[in-house]
Image 1: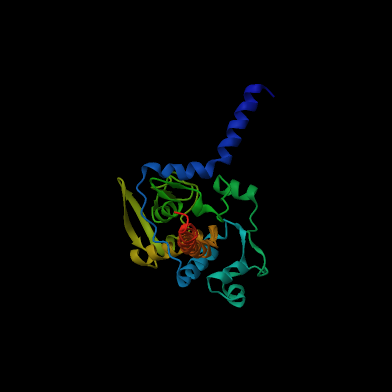
Image 2: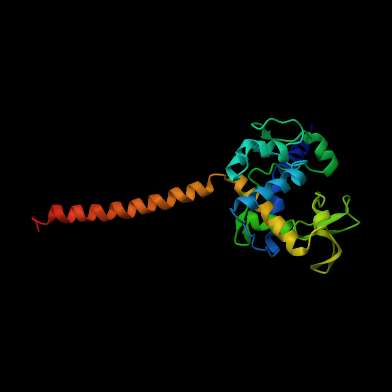
Length: 242
C-alpha cells in the first residue's frame, strides 16, 4: 500500500471520528432557539419516556444505568414497567442491541451515544441543549434524501425524523418551514415535548448538577461567614498592638 493511500485512509478515519463534532459545527450559521431546560421531575420523567420510546432504539446512553432514573422521582417498579421492554435488569446500562456495523450500513454513520450529547457544544451561538432543541424542531420533507427527511440545522442529515408522528410534516420554503400535515400534537405541545426530551438529555449528561449547585451555594455561604469571623478574630487579636 502506497504512502499516499495510507494518508488518504487516515484522513477518512479522522473524518469519521469527528463527524459528531462537525455536525454540531454545522449549526454555527443557523439561529439557535433557547432551550427551555427544566429540572422539574415531571418534565424529566416525560423526557425519559420520549427518550426510551423514540431514541433508545438507535442511540445508546451507555454511561447511565436504568436505576439512575430513581433520582428523577421514578421507582424501580415504574422504571421496569414503563421504560424497559426487552428483558433488561434495572441495574443495566442503557445500551442497544443494534451493532455499529449494521447501523452504519443503514444510516451511513453510526448513531452516537447520547449520554453526554447535551454537553458537547457550547459557543456564542448557543449551548448543546439549544442545538438539540432547535434541531429536533427543524426537520422537513425532502424526497431527494434516502430517509425522505432533511434538516435546516444539519443539512443532509442521515437521521430520519423519528418524532414526525408527533410534530407532523413540514416543507421548506426558502429559509423557513411550513407545517403542511399536522401531527398528533399541536406546535406548542410538540415544542414542550422536545423541551422535556432535551431537559432529560441535559440531566443525563450531569445527573449531579443540582446537588453540585446546592453544595456550591452552601460553600459560598460558609466562606462568607468564615471570612467575617476571621476578620473579627484578627481585629480582636491586634487591638492591643496598634
